Image 1: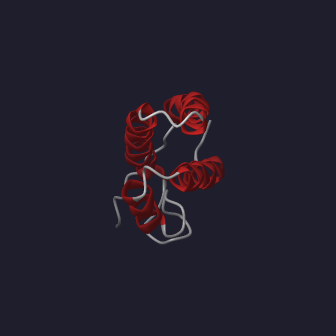
Image 2: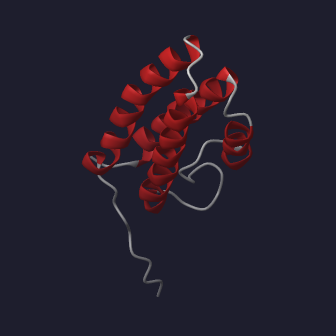
Length: 111
């Protein structure tokens, strides 16, 4: 008999990460627009927030690409963000990662 334990990750646990991202995204965009070097520091915070979100939401998913709590090609895309963090395109890609993860979370997380 298989004794797999079902792990439920609540919306209350996940949503603060997305709420934080919503604030960070606006600040980062403003800083990129004004060509402020501090945008890089804010991007580092946003990346760390995303990586924590991946860890927190992981127990709700499976191991295949359809159920894993990670966007398609997420690791490669996150590496692009880290490698090109100085570019506004990194912000665009990070925003897409958050958006796709939010959609996955919505499908698999219980309220």
